[in-house]
Image (cartoon, rainbow, N blue to C red; front, side, top):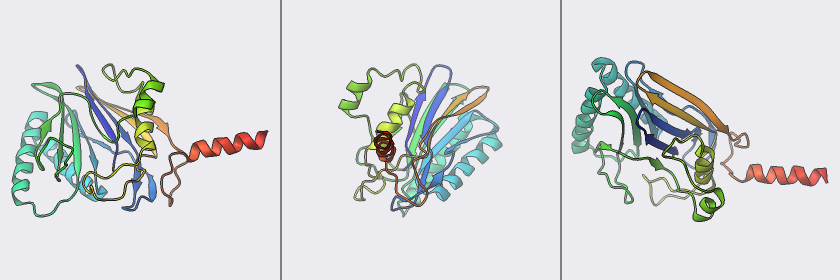
Length: 236
């Protein structure tokens, strides 16, 4: 399950995402950039679910962007396609996608849709919903973490609090919302990317990496801490 945070601002949309790819039973396969951007219009998507399905759906969205050359028209096509698909869908594919873009008429906008019913969510499957405030997929910081960390500055931008927020998600075991009866597991890892969508283009930066994540093993968020303790003991 990709962890992401998406925030609209007056002049931009910011997207934080982790990089972990893993098997259904939680074995780390490596890291990848998960935000996909259009070459034609200021629009970016990030998805959570099977990589092949996310890639295919993102390609459809990007083709609509190329054909229309318009954020508004692309979103209209997507909303209609999702509605039609929802009427005929017979399988729960367990995919969620967030979109950040600069609309020709509305400025910075964010949207989200899922192909499954989320008991904790407010949207129906295959319904494109506009998100007017910062939203996320992943665990919220605990009260203890927030007290120790101090005030957040999300309204100003995601970069300052990015590592804290993603580390908070990483340390907590989470259940895939598409499979609420599944086993909770640590699923955030690899790295943290910040993607900024503006009317004139994109900015993408790597903010943090977790070198302790080992391909072929499950993500262990406290492994780095244990390694540092062992190193400290060896120097005594």
